[in-house]
Image (cartoon, rainbow, N blue to C red):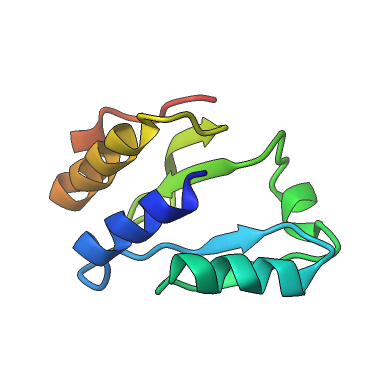
Length: 110
């Protein structure tokens, strides 16, 4: 589960030109709230009960993570999460904070 690792990254970098916005696709918002409370998420978590966001953005699976630069461009995309991926996510956030898309080496595909 990527959520606890996202919270760690947010705790380290949140605020200064960085935020996390999570969209929980669930028809059970009370279950999503319990998970957010259990993890102690300090970043906004929206519940997409009718899966409109997933349809709008062509979501192909869960979880999907998008890293978006200051210009609003998707720089990194990840489908799924495996143990150890948190190091990659942290490195990508740090690259974006240091210099945006160019420093990160361009767009990575799913």
